[in-house]
Length: 116
Length: 114
Image (cartoon, rainbow over all chains, first blue to last red; front, side, top):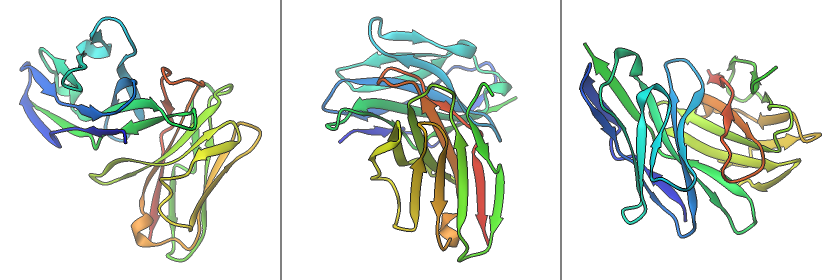
């Protein structure tokens, strides 16, 4: 069965420091991978996605993620965070199920708290 | 509107009452998802629609929960005989058909059962 594991529920970091939010997935079929961000009291919005091609994917707000098939990981990184990056980050997998439809499965989320 | 619209944005109901939550997806999007977000619990998948049919209802927590979609557009999530543990934010998302497509989320309905 497909599943997504976000290894850290909370990540505190100081402003201008680098950050990595970890995501591992399990799937027996090919998948597409996404990171979404949820700012306080707002809905989810897409940060970036991996479909195929280059394993390094760049998204909005200076974030990037690297797809590693052998390690089944899709970690999110930013070299220098801002206070405004404080939010909940969700990793998600889209996989085709036996019925021929695709389902988007989310991890439990990682709360990034950026401190001055 | 340009985005996914959910109503109401907030709902407070008494334990045992029925509630209906509405989702208006982006026009032309064939796929529609309902998720539940409880405090500190991440996004829990509830149900998925492709057009008007629901090939995956595996996430509905109990038979008190049901959902329908009409005209390949609006969807309603109904919770009967609400319980306090049903309190959560219910999120709807829609996407064009296809595995590689982004899901667009509404702002959610915050349900509080008192």
